[in-house]
Length: 283
Length: 308
Image (tube, rainbow over all chains, first blue to last red):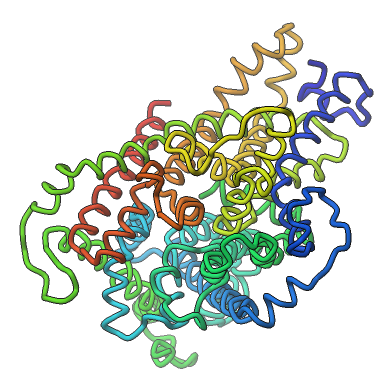
């Protein structure tokens, strides 16, 4: 092997055959990784008659499947539902996880350690253990089959709180003291002074929460019963089961569920990769 | 917020110490009021409730009846449960090592590539951003018999026999596992690459000067220094495989967990016990088992990291 980490500081690495081979192998591997996505998009642009033609570029691409799914099969509604749920939960997490993380990082008060350990310990509790009590609770309070029913379990998370606490600890106390002397109240200090200093962590939290809720399957499957309230993954499953072998329709549905996150990623690639690294290493 | 009422007017400097402490405490608990309520009602109470329900018989029709450890006794006597238990660990024991070895290999080499680095990285990372249930249908289509499924079409064009994939009791579980490994690979690669970047280059330079080869550098420097990253990913990925559900449910949904229960993981069993058979008590007992397994995995992580 020719390339090593010591090459990194060199401004220009020499081109060596080993390098070209390595690059080619990695490129082929990468293309294999996105093969399922390519075939999904390709098939979504085909008509029922062309599905058995396994060429990647459709002969006469058509958006008819997309139009049909969005207008006739309820995908538009599910799309809106998923967006509402994911945005509300993300906003709630960004607000409350930050507020709690900040309080735990920047205030000394009796019970602080207890609250921190209690919240941290919720990371040990798997969702699957809570769904039965959540279901009964929702049934009692009439939350079944409602937006709030889908959203309430995720409005705050121990992961987000822990992540934000880690980052608020790096904010210098002097900044906050200076603001206190200026007479700002504690809420304003948090919102106006501390929050802008942790935007990288905040965006990482937002990305993770949004992605997690956009793709969530288990709890929405349990809590929703009427088609009007399905989120996109649940709607897709019910649709795919109805369609049975109409794979071009099913692939269109899968594409509709995938496109938003892919578009966001392509727009914000560097940002997202950094966010994943941040959250993965600190969290 | 009620706490704003406690602000003394600025022209009252008398006893500022005490009032400031009280004021600060009011702010703190004002900030924490809703979260404390949330964690108590939505996390801790349900956790205790799950334990309590696991000692009851309850079909939602009649009030729950306390039956002691009967649910656990029945569960451990049930051959289906042990089949599911074996399946769950099959996902874990095959899935975690394979995905970690593959993702480390890719990360290790990807880290050395400069040309179009971001583009290559994006190719590997994209599947992480997909919806598991949607991709399950794509893979399910791939696994179909010949004229429909791509894999079998290619196999038959090359003159090889077709594979049954999702219809075979032997191959269905590995077929589903491949989907799950594929979906998680991008995340693991990114985390491994972050770990690799965090290793100071001076270590490598020193080793170079001493004439240490690439393989020795990998074994003696890179892997030991990467241990925290690796432990994190082992636990993260293990928990993921132990909780596998979306892929299995969508790829076998005409007979969830089939054929003949050969792909059914614990979470799917929980789902069916609770929401198809409505045996809430028995399902709660199964969730307690899942909780215990996950707790052991997490504690193992803490223990391994403490050894360092």
